[in-house]
Image 1 (cartoon, rainbow, N blue to C red):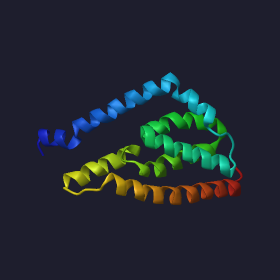
Image 2 (image 1 turned 90 degrees about the horizontal axis):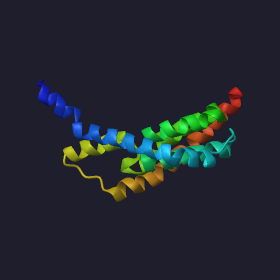
Image 3 (image 1 turned 60 degrees about the vertical axis):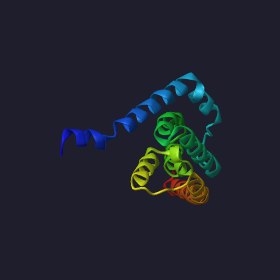
Amino acid sequence: VTPVAVVRAAAPGFLAFVLALGIVVRAVVDNGLADALRHVLPDGSGLLALLAVAVLAAVLANLINNLPAVLVLVPLAAPAGTGAVLAVLLGVNIGPNLTYAGSLATLLWRRVVQARAERVGLGEFTRLGLLTVPAALVPAVVALWASLQVIGV
């Protein structure tokens, strides 16, 4: 393997995009997003509160990407307890399947698919996401809530 092949495989353009994404999100967080989210983030460990936290995390992941969403939401959810933090993690891991930009994994997947001359249209991707995300997120949060009831957290 040559050094040039290693650099090409590292995809410097994509790495620059990820760095730029982090910088932009940090600026947005520092200039009001964290305060706004603090006001809408539910408090508590009831089923509806956990569902709301997970949905908020999923929406935010689709707007700013799942990695920055984790960095923003986990510190805000931590005072509400383990259940809220776990609901954030469910939301940012299941929810990003609604949009291409929702997760870095999806962006990388799309890059690989395009390199192989395959095409997955935005409409098809979004339609499948709208069907699968709620069908996976709601039962996952219900299972989280039930397990928290069993262990008494």
